[in-house]
Image 1 (tube, rainbow, N blue to C red):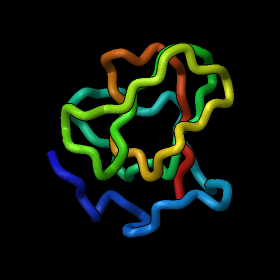
Image 2: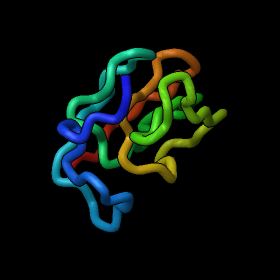
Image 3: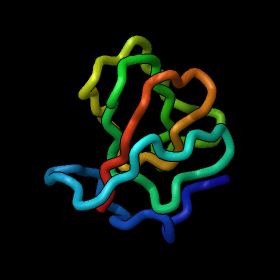
Image 4: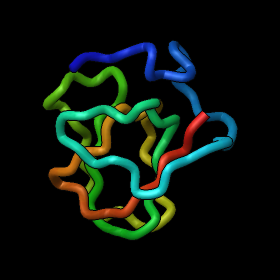
Length: 96
């Protein structure tokens, strides 16, 4: 599925210059379903591997990170999907 501006709380804004005001712990992990709404960012709560799909990446083009530490925040915003495949880290979203 392509980018959906109705799920992006800050369309056209590709920065995370402030902290979030909401979040979801262990957000939905899926190889086919987008977060709703998209996450402003994600943060790793327990170390492991991480696979995300940034908002403007095509389906099937996730970004994979190996052995990420607690506190890691990928440099992409917004995040539309946390992949189930290749993801062992526990994550929380940073929303709004």
